[in-house]
Length: 161
Image (cartoon, rainbow, N blue to C red; front, top):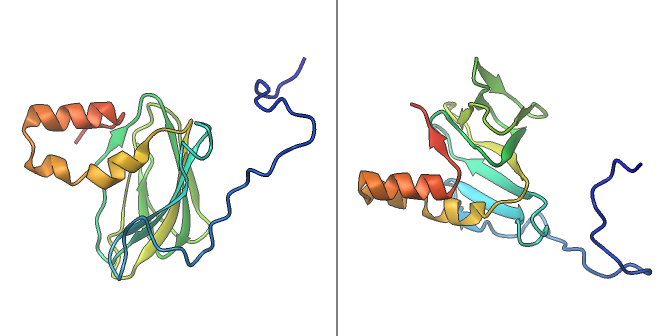
């Protein structure tokens, strides 16, 4: 009995399909001293297995309110600065090397309340089209309550505060 996932690749010799992204690649959203998001591995490039994003937050950037996801887990790995993470029970100031995994249904939030920039990796499993969420999340501010609810529902984000 195998505990590995179902086979996906059926060839015998391997293939050239890796994707390299140098550190100096410009962010996909934002940048130039402000908040930025780098699409490290999207659900498209990972064939739906996961999505990995590097998030840069300017000083006092804030962050999303407490929420949960029904279909995806979310993990946070702090790369630098101080990211205030909420695990559903307590808020902690996470520093470089700190990690938080939130399974489906787990309440969570994150923010940068410090006077310095902060940076982290976000990992979503399985992969989901978070790029559209990141690119359009500010648009619902001008939307009706119904439009805003549809947007967040479509992107598996359920806010509780």
